[in-house]
Image (spheres, rainbow, N blue to C red):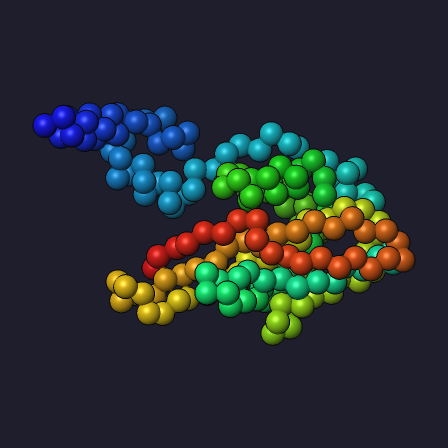
Length: 189
């Protein structure tokens, strides 16, 4: 009886909840769940895009970052990233990076930031190389997902996550880094 009352209170409270910052009207829990899945309830960015912070990353340099992007499965197999994104470290990109690694979904980025990103394709074992980099600090990101068969439910399961790393580059130097687990989550299809 006590359990039933608790469930009823949760359901009633759920019907009264607003969409968790995604809207101001009162909506049913099922709508909130759908809204959170569909929009991922984006959070307002507190950092502003500052072009001056990106200025050191405009001209080519002589630095280089090499490495491998991968995640390890529970069975010990390796799954490799197909591309790696390199992003200069700034106040603006740091807010985004912390969001990625802490499951916070920020509102869309300022489109001016895109011209400072670099992306390379990896080989079949996730190896990558960025050349002609100016001195500075960078985030490296690779999304790595795979389907796992069979599962106890008989449905394929999407596994994987976002592999991340950082690199501090100096002109004339080659930095080696593995882009691997920061965030690892399981998704069912």
